[in-house]
Image (cartoon, rainbow over all chains, first blue to last red; front, top):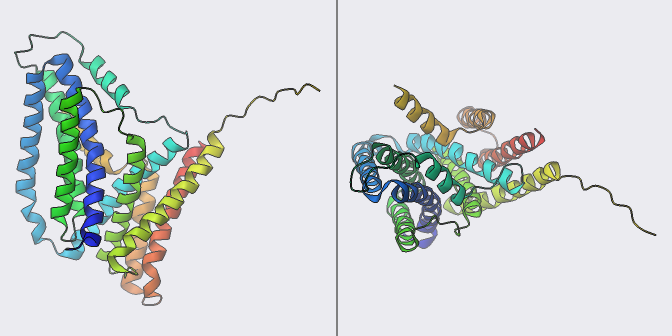
Length: 252
Length: 68
């Protein structure tokens, strides 16, 4: 296994998982701060336990699916997943929709949870469910990202990438106890959209018997094509969203 | 039942945001899969054509969304 082969899976998994971990952390932080850490931790560990159970049950089943079928199915799902991210990132960069803001997401969850709060030592059902749901949903995305980016025998680097992202985000969360607003999430999401769309397109090609020029290295070319296409789309979007400035009279 | 419906909706939402983008992408995949199975010509160009098609689908969808 060389860096050229393992690198794309590791980097893609690291960046994409980081976005998911940041989003889960924001909600768990809001739950812990407003409703108490006991409930937040029960929800979090419950979510992690369910994810481990699901991976344990469904993971081995993947080995029984023929490789080309697996590549095609994962490729289609990954293309839909990635192009959805990329579309949103382009519309955000073009000013058509507002930028994702972790501070706003934190505030939204905080307001939602700021009803009657019991003693911090007791379990709070709403808080447990909120943390549990966030961890399961974002965690499912991480599991999917690892399987999808590691689908060509690269599960170990893809898992390592996700694990590293999880450690970075959790460490930062413990250290600063605030939503990670300084992580450039919108730029990260743009990059991840490009990468995941490239992986999805690549797997569909592999699964349906297309020959990629340069084999695995064509992933870099694919990323370039989607980056250029998305930049063109950003530029066109800006031309539609630009508010015309009122004309001002020039004094002679 | 509501919780299950909500979970299914959230799961589908991971892959589908704009329905027309998802449909166009799937139709393009089906066209290329059909071409791979039944057309032997230009075998070496199928992969690049497929990738360019995906890029065109993305740009067209974004431009249409930006116009709204």
